Amino acid sequence: MRQVFLDTETTGLDAAAGDRIVEIGCIEMVSRRLTGRHLHRYFNPERAVHPDAARVHGLGDDFLADKPRFAEHAAEVLEFLRDAEVVIHNAAFDTGFLDAEFARQGHPPLRALATRVTDTLAMARSMFPGKSNSLDALCRRLEVDNSHRSFHGALLDAGLLAEVYVRMTRGQDTLVIDAADGVGADGSAAARVDLSAYRLPVIEPSAEELAAHEAWLQDLDKASGGKTVWRTLAPVA
Image (cartoon, rainbow, N blue to C red):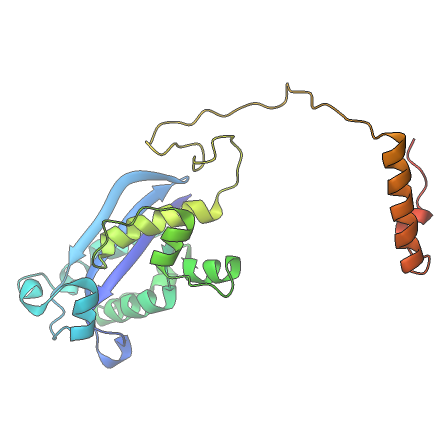
């Protein structure tokens, strides 16, 4: 499965009002392993960056003045995203800007190119209801190191998002607690432990424990008015 983790930085908050993308960062993962392929571009948005946006990502008008227009790299962006699951934090925001940029060049929207678009903000809200689910908050909660993040940067944030996503979606099938899908913190393969050869001891209850358990079951049966299910089940041989 090919996935692309994507983030953008923009001149402001409203693509419909003419705000534009100033930076895009994409990181490729195949079968839950980073491939080393990435796409990172800055763009001249052909309009001023709102001061509030500049304070977030640190990209000002002077820095962006000599950068290429999005139109010059639209085909490259399309090709990188085509036929991938695109994973975005707060997908509605980034897809709105991408679709506006694509439409200016006569290209189809992102959802027509990607196999699917996955919103990790929606995933996080389902997993951690009532909690802060910003990318920074998820990094803290899932122990992803973001100490080097002083400004929002598209490529940096896409990389953090990839780490967060893997930790949000992994299942523990190894005794190495810090391993993500069998990969250790240093990037080495984490040893999987085969537990099939182990025989777990069975500790039989004492007569006193059995009597206490039976008394507890009788209390439950009495409290429910004789409606407890286990009374109707045949004993197991």
